[in-house]
Length: 89
Length: 138
Image 1 (cartoon, each protein chain N blue to C red):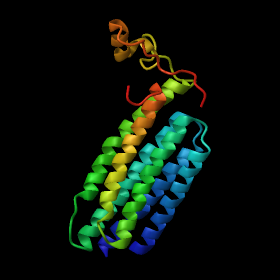
Image 2: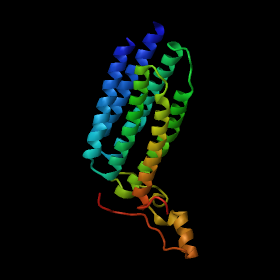
Image 3: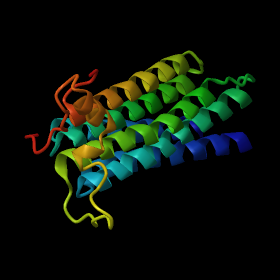
Image 4: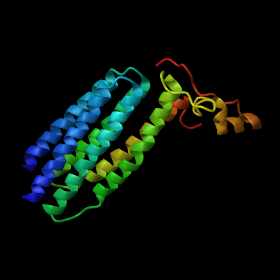
């Protein structure tokens, strides 16, 4: 039962990742592109944790924490760049 | 068996929420509503995955790790912050039509005079006054 639910969740988050990729490629504005990148990071974290459950190891949580931190910092840096045209003033 | 059903339920719920969030990112009509869908739904989706993973490792392998809680805490703390930044960038760059006007004067984010750092810099004369970029091409 868990294996079937895992497969379903993998399919859902994989499709979600493809949708965000489509949004990054074909976005109406820059802020939509940044939002799509942020969502892509969140989906990647979910896929990593799912893969950790699939493999039965807790190693992938460190990677998930790192990706969460890098994703947050990059989103804030992009938003700052959109607002001011510069990151460190 | 009960734990299996619970874990599978959380996984299915998380998958549905994650997919709906990214689908809303593609489908919704204007930037502010597009901001709404992924920030809520994918946070719930990742939350569901992390709860399922925590239950899985606690019941199947017998050790409870704090890493999932760390990821959950970090995501729940940072998602509103980044969403707020993106909303502010939207307001500055695009000035969406159809927003109600504020009663007193202007939106605080729309008037360059309310940027305290820019005011201080302009008064002390250390640097030319900063103006937020407006009407730039995408």
